[in-house]
Length: 158
Image (cartoon, rainbow, N blue to C red; front, side, top):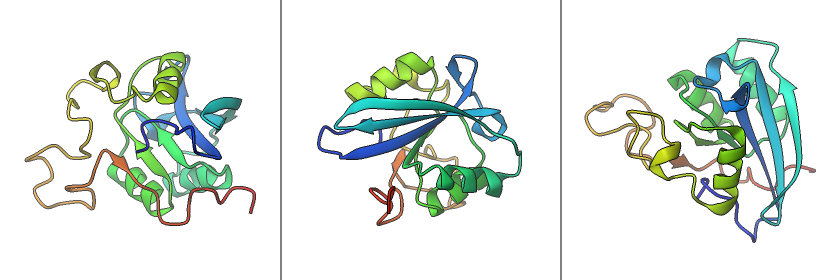
C-alpha cells in the first residue's frame, strides 16, 4: 500500500508538490516539489526542488530523474496521472493538508483518513468514483494507491 511507509522497506523516495507549507491543490501547476527520503520507516532527508517547466512529460521526467517512488499530491490531470503511473511512479492523489501533517500521516499509515482527502474525494481507495469514469480512462476500477510498474521500487542507486 502506498499510503504509508513500511518498516521493512529499505528505502523509499516520495515527492509532494507544494504551495507554501501545504500540499499543492493541483500538482500540474506546482512550482516546487518536496522530495523526502525514507529508510527503515524514518525520514532521513528532504529537499525542496524547483519545477522549471509546465510541460507534463518534462515534469514526469524530472520525477523519474529524482528517483521518486511515490508522489503524494492534491488533484492532478489525467494525462499527468497516466504518464506518472506508466513511468513507474506510484500515486496517492487527492490529498490535502500541511506538509508536516501529511508526512506524519504517511509515516504512521494514517494518510487515508478522511481529513486528508480533498472535498469530493471521500472514497480514498478509488481513482474514479462510481459513475464518473463510465468506461473511460485507464484508471477505472483501480485502487487509489496505484502501484508503480514492476521493478520500480529499489531501483535507485542502480
